[in-house]
Image (spheres, rainbow, N blue to C red):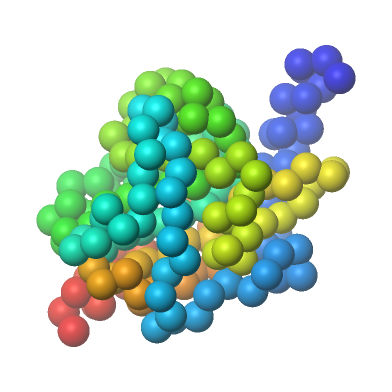
Length: 181
């Protein structure tokens, strides 16, 4: 497959993810609010391991997305970056996950000036644990879902089939409400 054709397929995959919510039938059900968040230990954009256990004591915005360098995925990342200081003020970290390689994430972060961690889930195992896998033309991609994890490691809020444009604001509003309780 030529690189132009491959990139066209990738762009279409992200577009398809935007056009419809992630379908539960494509992966296991998402874990329920109140349940312990599934553990993860994945390589980040800096080539280091990031574990959920290392993030205890902070709110974690764990967002899954289909593909680096595609329009919806870039818009979602830019909005999280734009609001990064607001998240930090609420004792929250943002962590993105897709099946892209750590090298792809490194390039994506550098190109788009992202200052939060992106994790590589090449076999989609963590995406599956969070019910966030979709298939597009035989390829497994992470579905656009977000999980708000409390400082004790429990799921506080689940967002399925999110729309990238207003999603960061939606997560901030939920986090602000949960922080007050």
